[in-house]
Length: 503
Image (cartoon, rainbow, N blue to C red; front, side):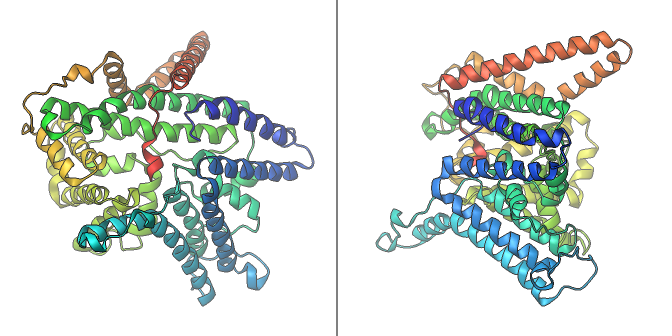
């Protein structure tokens, strides 16, 4: 089940919201048994989250359940609850015992084994088959199914035990609350990667307000519009052009495909994150932002501070800094960056194209630290943006294509060395009016236009309160229109993939 589906929008979500808020109502009314009803609400969220995952993955739900149990008990082991009878908040500077180290090792190892086996087994089979004679190749019967969201929930669950071990968060004795954190359906399948320390307080003390719920609805509808009206529209053109045989690919078509994919992946993933954040607010949770207008960046360093923030900060805190970060000399810093982005590429998928994409970004981060950044900063601001967008777009070609050889063909075509100088399939076959409109809106709203509009309205409303009411009315009409257009598009059965569901 995906957020941008009729079943989710008009069946699953309304039913879950009604039952949840009936359970949570005594908490909002400050009933003397509020804590009990909050725990019931968490139990309900846990159950519906497992149903949500089971709907799409059936019995593969056992993986997320197993990961949850392992990390919950490892957290208790590290905190001392299993042998001391009480939970302790560890001091960061205090030495760790053998039992605590064993607890951390079990947690990290089990999560990486889950992730490694289910995500990279087929990759290993393909790599083996490519190296041996045909008679020795493994058959397709050896292949296994990749569980949706395994890259996200294993990182999320594993970060809990690491933070307990480091003394950054206190372990919990409540299995239901912890399982609710791991499986919470708004962010279970495609993030953002939520850390326990960020919502530990909310699990047991959150409050529901009409303002929070309304902001959640607004964020969800905007994310749905990003996904359905922009990402889905440009995706058709991008996928169709990337699927062309080399003898039909021209330079203009390669550029159109790359531009469309650049817009698609941002609006697809940031749209999902917006929907996840909006849904979280509807249930009383505040998740951290996952995107901050990455396409306005003026360097690759800045791009990675704005793109997929929950992943980049995860790698920074749990891998880059433990490796030594930038504290052990320039050479070690470059090695750490390349290592992190090699693993970042591998995290995205079991494919050498993803690894190449990760190393490509790691290389430019190293080059910027070596002096390229200083050269770029001397350029006019507009050329700094152009530099960053070109680097990112070339990277998206590596990311989007099935093989490295296909990436080379498209990149050569973009450089003016296309296999075909003319094609029976003209640009107008891909650039329909709706695709052109989606590209224009995608380009405009990849900048913080709405942020500027809201700031402008606030300044006016400070002197003319009637303008604030008019703005809210206009916003309500716009959100209703977006939701209706999305519903009509989904009801017609249009193209509706989610890029990050593959990870």
